[in-house]
Length: 204
Image 1 (cartoon, one colour):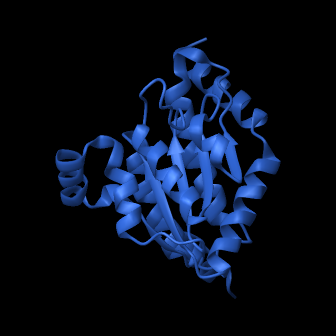
Image 2: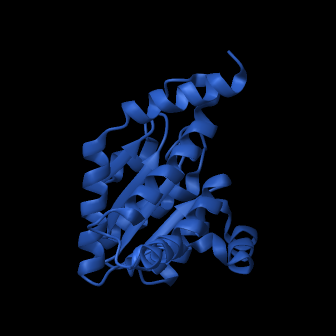
């Protein structure tokens, strides 16, 4: 098989292995947050930061969420990193945003944060702040889910079936899952542009 065959075959196997109930619990939990007027804060590091920024757009535009991503403000992010240290970048941002019990934090991460291994420790600190505030915690993560899976009320874990490609598969399927969520009938409130045009085309 070519590498393309191998990678896509692995993707199909991972999609089949996803916990559908976990996805539905995540959709339901997010719906509850929105319906009570809560805000959604999406956290990610590296490639997951780009995912978080994209997802904020989708949740705001398609689902009517008040949603934010701390990594969208590069000036504040780098100032906090420089002055307070990387560990505090997300937690201090959430405190400054007055995170409350009606709000939620959604994490996109390959490992989910791990203090012992010193990986994504800013996510760990942020989730500790969320717990103190009584905010809901959700995640789409890989490996064993790390601190995120431990803290979350609903978490989708991308199974680590292919050890040599955990990162690309986790990040790739994270995008699939969040697009599933913003298309979910319990969350989506506005049609996407091309689907709206298609509906117009079908009118007599």
